[in-house]
Length: 447
Ligand code: SF4
Image 1 (tube, rainbow, N blue to C red):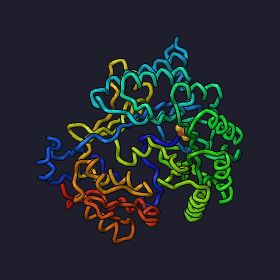
Image 2 (tube, rainbow, N blue to C red):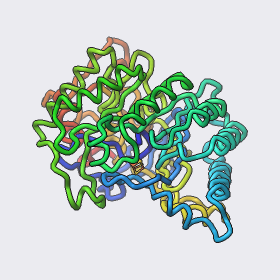
Image 3 (cartoon, rainbow, N blue to C red):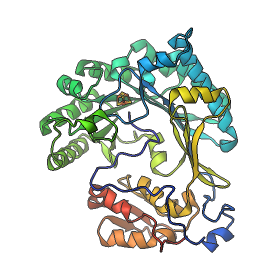
Image 4 (cartoon, protein in one colour):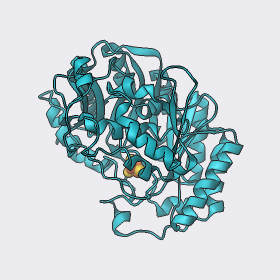
């Protein structure tokens, strides 16, 4: 349950409202208009298309975890979605057929663009047969110019692991596995409603390391009544197993989840912050680079797919409820596929997959860009703002000054023209929501 174009998890310090779709409209930027941006002066277009990734959503899980607000549905509903005479295997085939048709329908929006990474997320994609994954990836290679060295990740739940299936996923082209372990502690796993125990999690990692070049483990901390040493014990188990990447998430209470309505006894915020500090220190000692808010990698083992999100790259999102972001000739577009699997499958017969599509207003781009890139511990060159949005850095200037004055960011220069880079300070990372709020559009924002 790591990475996908789902809303990023941000340490919940102060809620930041997204103004997507509700932005005050301001005057168009004549300079951008003159440079041949979109016809609509409210929109912006990058000078060249950013790197493109593909996200594929598999929407079913064995059982719904009580903290989870992702678009995932219990496996038994898959049986209900199947027609009277249809087996779940036939339904899997129908879903893969729909995914392939979805790619075909999206081709005009990504024509000729090379795909640098693929992420099959969910839900629990490791419920898919290797045959289905093979058919999907064969279609991806046939329909899209897939980079021969593309990173291809699949998310796996330790409760669904079979050695033979992992071997066959590898043969189908998957070269990175992301395992949703969350904890190795049986008692904790039961409390947070996971379908697996600690032994299964350890076994899943061992099998994954046999078959895949790169293995990520998702862990959660600040679990019900969790003590610091228990959180560190989970981390030590993952490090000792030899995984290449760790994603460590703070358990948060998301609206519309059972945990939100009946919260378990969670550690207080100070205790949770201590855990976060200790986790960061332990991973640094073990040689992991803390490169993103929740992501830690051994040298050279970052998730290339997720890096593309955080560098405000483009992604085509297919499958039920998948989100996409695409730079087109008429602006930067965000879209979401039909959310319910039933509706998505129904739409497939009419080649109608998209539930929502919106062009991102230029006034929203500073916030949207910063919301992604400021998650990166090392920051980004400021020139990336123009490369990804087509807007000049002037659109960030006032907020950058304020953020620097508040010691939330540093701006470094290498002396070359356009060589400035921005990165969050430790304070900025800790108060990320407050930092991001500075980039929300105001009536005085440049248009
Ligand atoms: S397995 Fe992952 S996606 Fe499925 S319900 Fe649990 S947390 Fe959500």
